[in-house]
Length: 82
Image 1 (cartoon, helix red, strand yellow):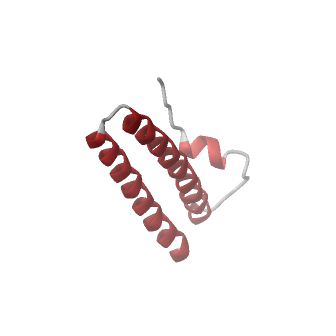
Image 2: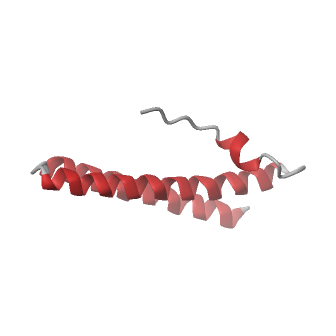
């Protein structure tokens, strides 16, 4: 499983001349969406862990999803300050 990230290149490419503020806004929006995708995966795997009686793992994956969503809240606050 290989998960490469090139956030700056992928999501602001082709946007013309953006200011640093605009680039940061685009990156924050991307990171929020990206994190939401991760949360979905964590919760899917927590269900699989649950079906395999891995209660401790279920709890940890749910906690990871909550922490990730907390990070998104910080990113949303940052967007409002741009």
